[in-house]
Length: 487
Image 1 (cartoon, rainbow, N blue to C red):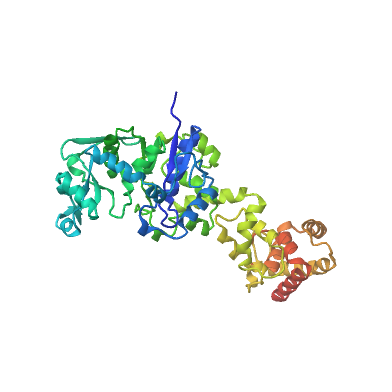
Image 2: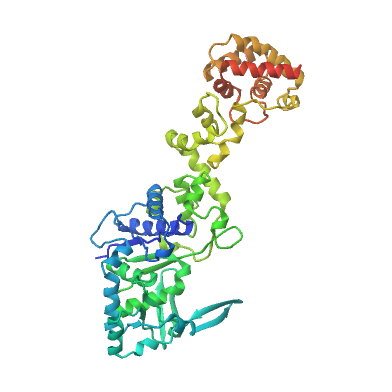
């Protein structure tokens, strides 16, 4: 019988959710849901200094808006909680398991002072970059039991370190990278419990993943170098390791790691720039994975059905803003009216203060934009007729010039003054009758009329739509101004 798939998203509450973290959450969700498994949310708040107020709410809100709903978490106890690491610290879980390793000789108390540790620092140059590292010399591993007990009784500050062998190798397996072997000489005796009693990120991850039954661990490939440390801990406890899925780096268009300076590195950045949730999720899924067919537009349900984590690419994924914009435009076209207006009307209100039908104005832009802020500028003419050069009435293809335009507007003015019905259908009927009666081509009539009511050569919507929104009084005022300009 197959083991039930259980994955987790375990963010630190340090601010907005980075695109890379959203991808981790998405892939973990898809791996679980593709097999009908469980997706857990765990808050890793062991680094108290980096916490940002309100960050947990940001995490919850982002997951909810993107549809990545967790089966277990701080608000949904599945029997393996608490799901917040600081609460697990208070419950004594990490110290309990650290002591088990101490009893087995796989970890030890370290009472070394800061001054002594400073003296162990080494300067290394890697790829032309110089940095200082501390390689611990196992000094406290050899302390007599009596001295350790006396130090603990005296309340001396301590950390708990992992006892990593200096010889031999450690091998771990990643779904994408296969078997990777490292020399144990490269692995330091990392700290498991810090002097404040909180576990380190690495130790808490291993303990929690095991106790919560996590079968697949998804994370960025920047954690590949830490994987041997996890493996040593699993071996020390005698636990079975989960499957590791290390995802590729996400870079900007210049092949540099996507950073906050890019302005679009987080989910909330993208929402503020006018992207919709479904498009963000769809695009993030494609940052390292692609389906076997050429389709690129997927709902979350379709992603769940098609996603195969074995097909994740190891090469860095480039965040292509143009592609995301295109994808977003496709999603905007399909948005139901209520959701579209929720995002579009605030953009309309940035430039329109007059009592016009804002929804009809927004409708004109729905198929013309890729992101919502693009709405404002093209509709500005509804608020105020811009100054324009009468030369734009001349259009060779439409076979119009200033003289033809003046004649058409002059003939239309009394007809439109007498017209009571300024609905789209009413205007189309009246103008169609004039076109047929005058013998003019449609373009010869509608081109100058649209110029007159908009002052622009290119507009969202045609003359009918614009006049319906402006209404009779404003449309006639603008037509009279056009006649005056042409005269």
